[in-house]
Image 1 (spheres, rainbow, N blue to C red):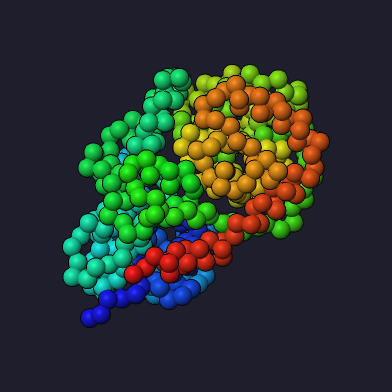
Image 2 (cartoon, rainbow, N blue to C red):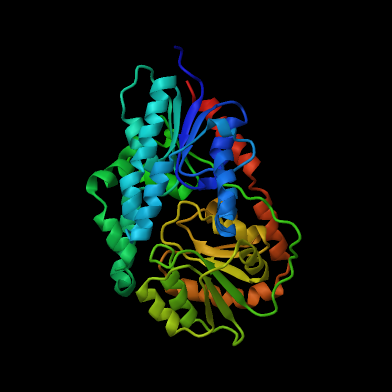
Length: 408
């Protein structure tokens, strides 16, 4: 059997809105897409008896253009994952236990059909390190910064803000077996080509010893919404969207919010399903802060459009899709250099950047923008124009160009 020119792609969830398997399928390079749950015809038929919320979620697990016959779902792994969630196991421990199954399935497929591999970082070790009768081309999508960079940054932040570092998620991460940590930390060493969504992620790999020539940056895209105006809110409205733990920098934002001299009518809306106890205590002592835990997609779009500014001062971010979502809704953004923001544009595009963990700088930016944004209507139009330069079709085209350039 000759070596296939096609790729096996594998990951859990709706990562990157399924754009990588679609990029491969559009030019008949997709051998098989291995995932946890997908809207297969039989499953959709059975789902009619389930509640509306379940059917809606299932419908989101589909993308036109990916042939269903080339999708394989690891249903037993999916059932086991949700069972563990129901029993109260920490998600990070469940993923550490089950993610290898996607890599093993990809390995088996590549062995049988002599395919190449296009795998995401947590699902690549077993497939990349296996011995094959054919030499598969190994492409790694490194969607999160290197483990050593993240650990160093979080530990440094913990020294300055010890009350917010000890969280349930941090304790769970420490409980992950070292063998699992090593697999994701070192898998890049076995890749022929590495794709990252941001230069920050790329720099973290280079710091770990990766050759610059093997590592390409391809920023994500966005589907530009229609029907949103660019009128600035009359009052200063700040929006945070993300998890309520240390990594997203919510504690930095809340502390800066308390310090800042802002108009009395200013308001901070925090969209977050769960907030760590230490950060929750800051929320309780902060004025003009509204926490919303259950927000629909439509409600979130309305919040983007009605906010003066999205602020997410992440300590470590592989990309930060919420920045692009906000810009697409004409909402300027404020974040750190450890994100995709330097790759998207500058202040003329409604993108403002601060140093990680610098409360004085973050406070000063909030104060400045509370007045600057109110008198700069054109900046909202510029933010939307910036987002329009990052499309999913362009992302897919760049993925294929990287393959054409590098594939032997």
